[in-house]
Structures are given as structure tokens and as C-alpha cells.
Length: 76
Image (cartoon, rainbow, N blue to C red; front, side, top):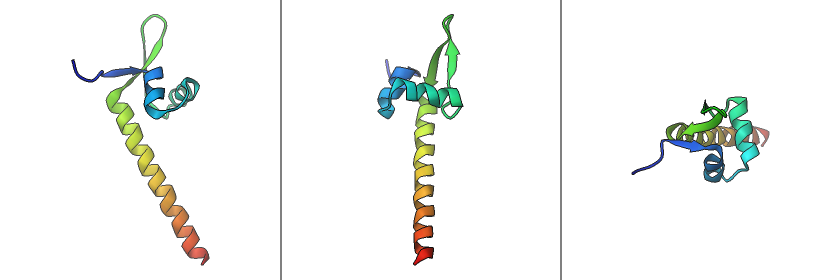
């Protein structure tokens, strides 16, 4: 069967190595897009969306490092 298309918040937390409450906070804030399904409104994150989220996180980190390095160079 291949890779699952949708992941539970617990699955997402495991991939990112963060707690379920941290994962829920990312979804609740809109930082990590997710959908609610079923009568109990359980959250699901599409695998592709999670990979995009991770890629964007790497870009933000690289940008922050570049900004810090520029600031340090300007102080010298």
C-alpha cells in the first residue's frame, strides 16, 4: 500500500519529535494547515503539507542564521 496520505496529530508529532500539545498548537494557530474530519472533528494533516511545512521551516532557519551572521559582521 504506500505511504499514508493523511496523518494524525500524533503521527505528525512523532515525525517532528514534538508533543501532541505542541502539534495541536501549530494546527490551531494555522501555522500547520490541517483538516477536521469525522463526527468527532479529528484533525488530519496531509503528508505533502507536512513536507512543505518542514521545507519552509528549513528556509526560515537559514534566513535567520543569515540575518544573525550579517548582524555579527556589521558589529565587527
